[in-house]
Length: 438
Image (cartoon, rainbow, N blue to C red):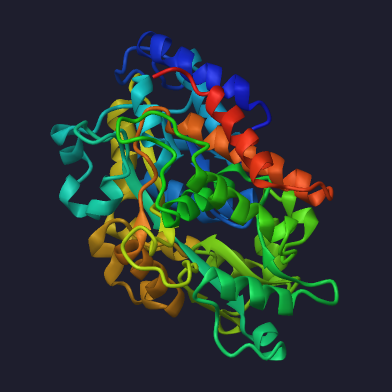
């Protein structure tokens, strides 16, 4: 996600902790009753190739819900570049939706605001029970030891997508399994105006997700065990520099990628402008651009040469989208009916098929649509080599600050400036200094 004013967003997070309990959420604020029983406002995240694609996927399902319940749902698809700031503003002002999608990595941060309805046992019973969901997906729905702040809606993980024809044309027989191999392959593939790898440098979420995975492979974390920020450790510096070097040193990603923020890297891969892409369940997006599943392969993201042990072998963060209810919605009963509908076995199959993601509702996974080579790879990553981002209240600030730091460094690399260990450390130190005190 690209935040235009990250400092303002961080200040807003701090303010929320004080004000959210009083202001609450809901379409106009209020006391959490059912004074608007026939209407709901829903903020959906941008899952498809465009906002229009999301509307095409969701609106028929919302009409189906209205036919079943008599409750009309007003849909707004919110771009990732705006979503977190919109949610934070809604939590402080009380002017927001009844139901919304959130990135699962934000769950603990938004939970700490007090603005979201906790899913205790009784609330889970109203949406079909907690035992229907994957345990790993539920673990990314809020801080440990607390009732979840949301329920899982779509599950994903990162894979390395590679263009089979471009690999064959370059004489590369197999996709890379290590970073050394990825760089070497990427340099062979970078020619004639095409690049070996496409990245999304203006997208803060993409930046922080890859920084987290690489830092984990470097046996480091951006937070201490006590939950304090530790952004500029040697391992973190090495991880971020490795990512920035795809443009700066290795030159396997186009300088223009530093500005990409809205799925442009997926477009570049689908149209043959880049031979590799690290993305979360990209199949549906690639199909929308006319790329056949036969044209690409998917393998886990590379690891360091000689990697051993769980941390070095981590290839993805646990990705996914959760669905939350503002605590002070004017239609709590209707909001929970809508959550139950969207997480029903039938809707989970419909929606996750459309988006090429994996249903976090276990029963829905039996559909053959989720047994494609791509999704089998992604599901294997979720089971075997994915790790959750830190479930700490400051997680959204962490995403904004580290994502922005990487964005700034990629911009420097794209402009031809040298990016050194010292440059990276200075940017990460600046990010850590902007974190609010615990």
